[in-house]
Amino acid sequence: MRFSLRLPTERVDPPGEFLSAEGVATVARAAEALGYDAVFVTEHPIPEDSWLATGGHHALDPFVALSFAAAATTRLRLQTNLCVVPYRSPFLTAKAVASLDALSGGRFVLGAGAGYLEAEFRALGVDFARRNELFDEALAVMKEVWRGESVRLEGRGFQALGHRALPRPAQHPHPPIWIGGNSRRAIRRAVEQGDGWMPFPNSRRHVGRRHTAALETLDDLRQSLDYLHEHALAVRRSAPLDVIFMPLRSPMLGPRVHAPAAQLDEIGRLAGLGVTQLQVGFPGETRAAYLEQMAAWAAEVMQKLR
Image 1 (spheres, rainbow, N blue to C red):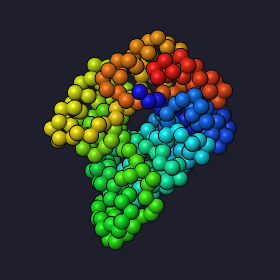
Image 2: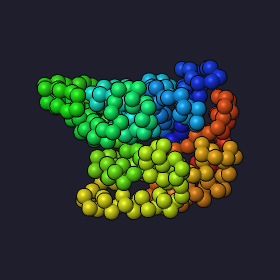
Image 3: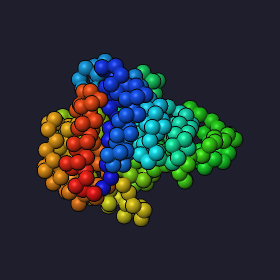
């Protein structure tokens, strides 16, 4: 089991606690020293007011934030959870991924999704109804671009007839691609086009808001994994697929007391289902509190699973 820590860069207040070069570097270095395997950030370039008022949050540009974490560390993996691929040109995303992977020495993991905030799509001038087609197209385009050879590609809103993008990513053929989402379409995409699947806890009351399937219990996850394995068999995929999840008892999702014994039991069950990496975060409102909670969880939970 591997462990990825949320960089709390969505905490824009109080200024300087997390939203600073020092704040990102301090949390990233502490994560590396404590034995976490990775850090992750999310993406929301221009969220709408109503979403922010009902539990939504801000976010730094993911590639900029992770570049600061990369510069402060040597081993830590750098992950997006997730990059909303349809928001931008696939060529721009391919360039950002390759640049960060090259400069970090091959430590980047692209967690990618189709997105669900309709108003944010409208603000960015992207057709929400076509997000899945745009996502699939972008995945194919980026893989071609990362080969470092001249490409001849035409798609929805672009034409590149004899173009090349260097540098190539440090990882070959490209950084791992983890597909986010709970739907069966997301699962099929992960099996057919990805290196990992990133489901996330989602209550049934939020299905309409997040445009993806509910996932409230370990039984829900088990059923989805059964479908994943069935589809892998149907398309004759033999390569292993990472499964990335978070404990349902995570402090990110509910009680601020992280209940180590209960979490250890749940993590054991997740491992038994085939989960290969856990994503965790903590409720600390200050950098000092967050660092303290990181250290406590590492000692009381993570190190007991090594």
